Amino acid sequence: MTATALTLTPAPTGADDACCSSVTGTPLTADAAEQLAVLLKALAEPMRLRLLSLVAAHEDGEACVCDLTAPVGLSQSTVSHHLKVLVDAGLLTREKRGVWSYYRLVPDVLDTVADALSTRAR
Image (cartoon, rainbow, N blue to C red; front, top):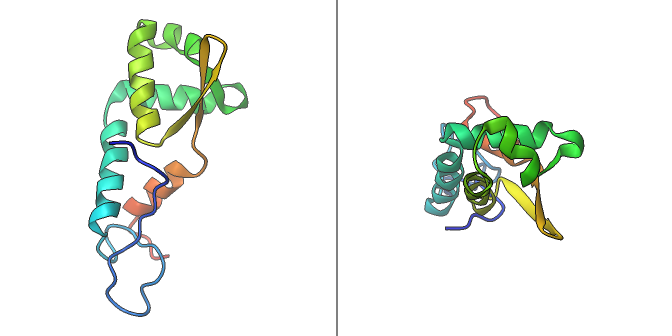
């Protein structure tokens, strides 16, 4: 499943519940729960967390797959597989330039995940 922009809209329970909510507030809709699960599943793998961190911390917040293989000690094909999972989940974007693919963190996606899991009132 390919996730698009995450919109964690709570299930409607009343007129005052128009804003997004965390999973501990208003219950999520089935679609929102599915989208969040895709993101969490992609993030639940240690190598993917490392790759996401490496991309986000890289100069200009963008990294080529060729920049990521040495730091993680994996082959280009294995790194590419993990990056594809992160792209398909909607956590990274990919831009092809010549023979190389460049990856960038999707703006605000981690904030959205954090907000969805937060117990803070918003």
